[in-house]
Length: 412
Image (cartoon, rainbow, N blue to C red):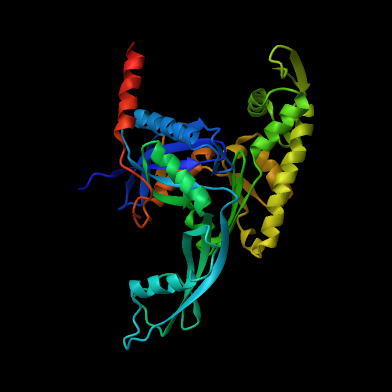
């Protein structure tokens, strides 16, 4: 019996880099996550690289830390991308079966999908995903697996995701600079949605919201596939900056008291405690009431989820998410009361997106919403076409040398 392959998922978040290392079992369709690590990164903002060298250092730190915890080495990884530079839309393709037997082959399916993506896009963009939603045979819609069936006309509906070539290449160059290769770049929302929703939810219809620090991804899944996706340049860091300005303190202090004491819905206001914190000078001490923090946090939360609601309403797929509601994931979802506010503003049921234990087995420390995309990348590897690594290189000697030198530094 072959040994399960060691794989890694690297989520290039908005201000953070998160890596999970695990093993995939194609026979059972499950993955076992061995370890994970998340590192703050000032070289990336909203999923876009601002500084390759700084981003590469964060990638190297996150991956090597995960390697140490997992006691495994990796060279290639699945790269989760996000950000407003991603654009998506739906399209249709058709293909005539001219053979006498009319039996559809995998080559026919590949041909009709190629026809669906035969549309002009600007020279600075490239296709990231072309995802079949459903097939039609001689105008009969709703076919999921046409291979082996007979028809004269094969049609397909697809969801297409394109990316800025320069932004995507800068991400891949950062990974290469860190000493790793990219097996395949993957839209983080797609990987996370496939992990967080069970087959029934993907069939009935659900909204997935990946709430990052500087970007937010919105996706509608229904009839077993993704129907709509959009990335917005808003996130939980906006709440942190509001607190920093309102309380006249540093962003670091504001983030700390947001996570420890912040709430995003009035029903969680149990008492009105005094929260002590240091001012922007780092020396003076101040206090703030929990209710005063809520007054700062709530308007931004309302603005963010109102923007999400508008995108869903304008998507023409709003009715599809009624049966299940929304699944909220990402680091921004962990603020207390966030699901309650989302439920009230979106006017639908909302639950926190935690990876399903039946699909992924992982230590409790990484079985959380802020690791969901990285874990989803491990699951995605099972359905990947095994694309040729892009702009990657085998782990170079300089990286190994740095690890050896780091060991000597620790020793002495």
